[in-house]
Length: 187
Image (tube, rainbow, N blue to C red):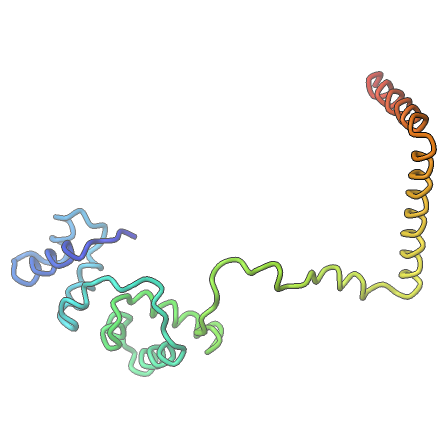
C-alpha cells in the first residue's frame, strides 16, 4: 500500500472539493491505483478537518473497551468501516476491519493487545524434556540410568588409560583412524 504525504492528501482533497474532477478522474491524473484512498481522505476531511488527513503516530494503543465499543457500534448500526472510523475519530478504517475479524474469531480475547516479536527463551522451560521424563515408566527410568552409568564408566576407563600411557592411547587411535581411512578409500 502506498503511503502519501499530508501535502499530497490536502492537494487532492482541495482539488476535489473546489475543482471539477471526480474521484476516478483525480486518481487517474495522479497515477493512483484506486480512488478509494481519495474518497476516504475527503470524508475524513469533511468530518475532522485537517486532523483527519494527518498521519497518526505509530503504535498507538487502544484500550480493549474502545475496540469493543467500536466493533459493537458497527454491528448494531450496520455502519461501514469508514463511517465507524469517522464516528470514533479514527483515520484508518482497515484497523476496524482487523478488530472486527479478531472479535468474530476469538471474542473479547481477540481485542486484547499482545506483545510483539519473538518470546524470550529464558521465560519458557523446555516442555519437550519434561514430557519425555514424565512419560517414562519406573523400569524405563532405571534402564536409562543404567545406560548413563555404563557410558560414564567407559569414559572413566578411557580417561585412566590415557593418563597412564598417553602415547599408547594415541598410537591405538591413530591405527584405527588409518585403517578406517584405507577402508573408505578402497570403496
